[in-house]
Amino acid sequence: MSSAGDNIVLIGPMGSGKSAIGRALAIAMGMQFIDTDHLIEDRCGADIPWIFDIEGEQGFRKRETAVLEEISTTSNSVIATGGGVVMSPENHILLKKAGKVVYLNAPVDVLFQRVAKDKSRPLLQVENPRAAYEQIFLQRDPIYRELAEVIYQGSESSSPEEVARKLAERLLEI
Image 1 (cartoon, helix red, strand yellow):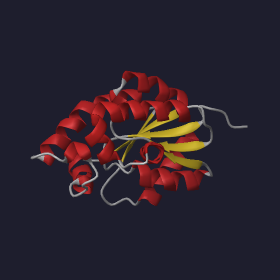
Image 2 (cartoon, rainbow, N blue to C red; image 1 turned 30 degrees about the horizontal axis):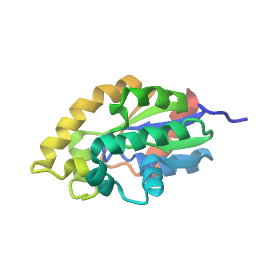
Image 3 (cartoon, rainbow, N blue to C red; image 1 turned 45 degrees about the vertical axis):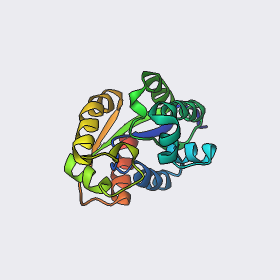
């Protein structure tokens, strides 16, 4: 029988593939898929850029914590989180409570290339998005590493399904 805490929780920077890999991993492992950003949008009835515009990053982070608190009691799920979920120390406890934390990473150049033209990334809607991305990455990378039970280093050439297959094999070994 499944219980809370048997989930796989994906953390990592913008563009690391948490949603795409998470969907594929859920299928590969016969689990349900939960995307915290999509839950926030569904509950709020608005997209994330709008939430950032109206409530600011702090308002969004409060919503993120509430959703994480709610889903930390689910079971048999692959949970994709937003890149900034690790910025709240309160969330560190919730992430660990929710399940096995997996840090999806890739080279910064690859990550930035994936998100550079995406207008739905509020933290990159600045004069120098590359510098902003690098700063965010440098700030968050040590936190991701500290929280993760598994670190998966991706590359430019791997498909989400290929990463999910390799990750599923690795998780089953643990």
